[in-house]
Length: 308
Image (cartoon, rainbow, N blue to C red):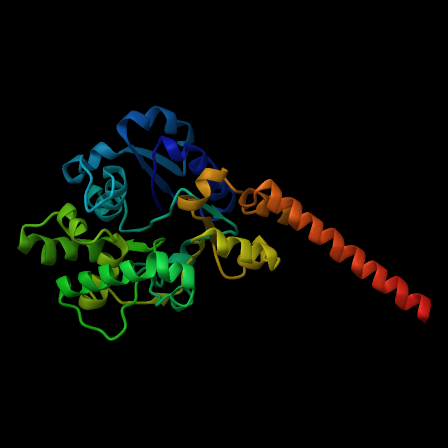
């Protein structure tokens, strides 16, 4: 596995690695790539199954200025994922985000179709397309960017399938991408991301175009709550980690919206999980409604018992 992190995500990384160690049934290795200045901080995680590396190993590919409206650190974590194969540590690697928490045991069979070919996460995300908030805030722009990648790759399909992240990257596919697409154009990873900053879609669409390895399609390994509406909906419906573990290896509560309210534990009770999203007034209102509902049910039962 590969994690690109930095000191601002240190506590997220600690939580991830704790869950990784707990559920790593086959002692797979996690490579953690961080800025050189953060090495000493992250070295506490290094052990037999966790290797901490400096991003300077990939320095020739990294950027120092914002790109395509994104800060350099964001672009560099994308570049690290696309270029990590060049270090020669792994033939295939699962890209995991620091916000992830593993919720059940995992092993090679979860990620590999056979001894050499990884599964490929490919979805249309129809449930996100019909969600009004996600469609308004993210879908339209993202769809345009993905189509732009397809056009640049000269890949034509009536259905464009990709994923948001947590993909198993094949070094065979990435080597082909560099050799047969970037190289002839004189491009680097930076140039590709300057056109469209979606590293997983570059990988997924290139694989579908070339099929340099067999495509064994899987649905996402990780349940991602993209915004607070999705998370609150799951909480109020009583969805537990045990429920999610029937389909997923891990869960992510996206820090792009949750960071301001702190690190939210996916194992929190319903009141604990929903409280960070509510103001004191809203929380009081929810509690008040709960009390009224409880009293109404009890009074209703009392009246029925008396008439009976």
